[in-house]
Length: 309
Image (cartoon, rainbow, N blue to C red; front, side, top):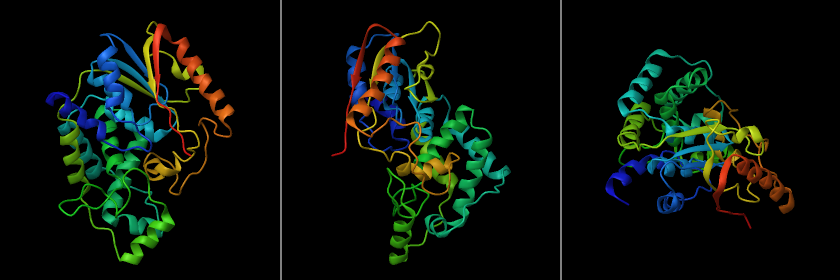
């Protein structure tokens, strides 16, 4: 990968996502075979890897996912903004906004230093009121990626007590873990973490354009073209892994930051059915048919499948 492309590709790592596929997968396919002006569709976009690969190559794309966390991560990879704009937005929110909704309970007191948690809640409430600008969408993605993760010895990269990076820690287990080790949460300056990440991810941006959509791809209206006369030349996607029903529970902290409940949400609404292989395939067929209706004749579809035991 050329150095310029490698610098631009840093943004793909803004936030991990469970069962994500590598950037090289769509980048290689589109780089070798797509033509200038091609449009790309990913009806199960996850953290937006296909859409970001399209952007790196100067292509336009549409990413769709029914998970709010996935849509928010994808949005942060497709906006045009700069690190100074992101920092101005972050400082304004933390200086001027107050918070009235700080979660209580043992998990929260062990997961975050109280000053760090208050800053997170200020950002959360401000985004729930308005998250339309490119700078705010990018800032939200940065915080999602820093919301939880391992503690670093040199300088903090994550805002939480010791936690997994890809999925949210479950409350009871985490509290026991922290208590047994006497591992209280350290103060983490939210602005410092944001500043480092903004400089890393938003200094070199690619030129392609993309649109994201929080929607259910099984519904025909969800995959409507970005522009009425446009059609897709490529469909590159990885459907939910068969048997994987915990995309939202595994992302419950990030879902809370986006306005969800402050406890684990185990509901499976708006998700592909996993009750049997036949039901799973029937739901996928709805998505493929919807994609066919908005694609050019001879469009190419590449599907990366996964499953759990």
